[in-house]
Image 1 (cartoon, one colour):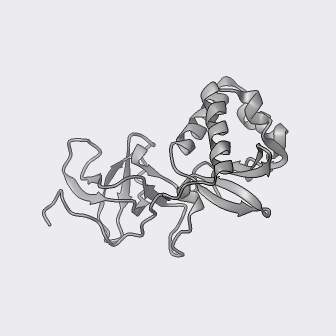
Image 2: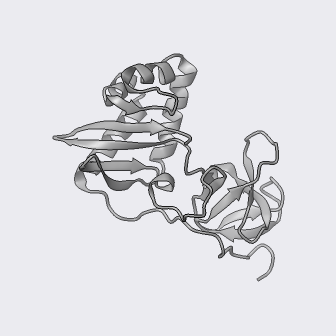
Length: 207
């Protein structure tokens, strides 16, 4: 194939789920979307259990929530941004603690190939996403990638609109940052407690 129309086929793929969520989990997701859209911090906090994990540094429960997300307006604004980014992607119905649960986003929740290094992995979020020669929307397209798991290349640059990545073939290029997501970026699991009640099991980033 000619440069600019090549399709990467040798990378692992992680395709978004298309299955419809059970009605109870659909209702939970819709309730969370309503809370986020309303920027209702008190309502969100009410869904944090005493043992909800909020970091890998020991922050749990409502107290941990307040320390991390309600301490200043900038932290709270980031909370809404992170939740909006997660809710923009599909999630997965799972079972946690013997109950139905909603895990999101799918880039964390779905199984990964055993040889994927989640610390460097980035999941391409769409079909036919351009891998470009330079971090420029007008730069030549080296390949078109669909839902591939690629490797982030640490080139010392600060995070911005473009990310340098490597394909399994060794070819490197740039992908628009909003079109990829790390499996260990922010994610959550919500436990369905029945009768319309739900709680966060965790809301964390990292590993």
